[in-house]
Length: 409
Figure (cartoon, one colour):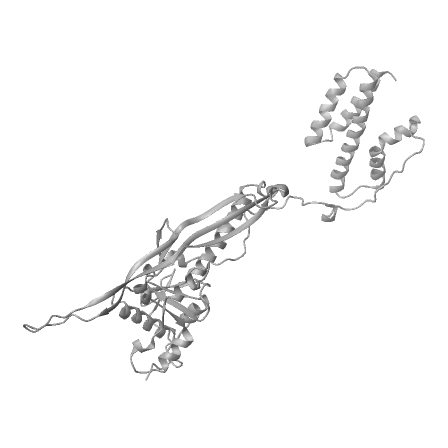
């Protein structure tokens, strides 16, 4: 067969396929037809085009088969025809003597297309929701209640008045005047550091800003929670922060007088604690927040006037965002152990920061050779509750405080 005739035959084959093709396959076939029509009459060129035509016929046959099967399945004759088309090149090799070993032609059984035909991935592609679904984590609230200031030193000091002696008073004519004196003492807190780090591969960071942002968010959140925990109950030893509950006053039931309170409840405890603060601070501090565990807040909402009177306690006011007792908002936080409370004037708690939240990235150990990056986060600061302001805070457990109120005599 002349080379020109071979080219014409190949063009005819592709012309027969283009009418049934769609989309990108149709574009590929049309491009191949154009190449065939413009091909040079050289044996090597034609041989290469023949191979491409054979591949394209197989591709077109498979596409046609998929379309037919989606219409309800192929007959035996149609399946046999498609099998011959798919193996056209191999049949020609046997006919021309190029393949004397022969080949095996598998005729697939006719069947319906179901989801099991998808061997990898999802069709259509799954709808991936944005962002990461993070584990539940405590919302940091205590830090927002405190007054804030900064320092450039590693130690914070203040001067407070100690014990006073003598007293002012009225004086008779020619009598000696009243002498008083006082002591002054220097108090201090040392700046402490709270840290955390994460190791991440370069490949993970290369996945985009969403990964690096989530890493940063996780670091900052965990460091803030650690700071908050220290500012709540830290014992100030070693690297530990000083916590507000370690300087707060214990609940004092005697503020309520000498008459036992029958059926004392949580509201009674909070009311006495508020008065305790007002008396101790001589009106220089007024409670502005109560910290309680969510379960205790729920119990408070369900508190009744008595066992026989099922009306709710009227001094509670739910303003939507906060529940208040006598106008003082209750802040829910799992930072506070269930059954405990802290009430106070939190403007008297000073959050002093040496370095605010800082994130840095670099290499550590064999990070460089293992394609890791170390991302670290740290905060430096301390809590200052000046000595004469510490009675502006009261803490205890509800159970112990209720027992004290009911035991008054």
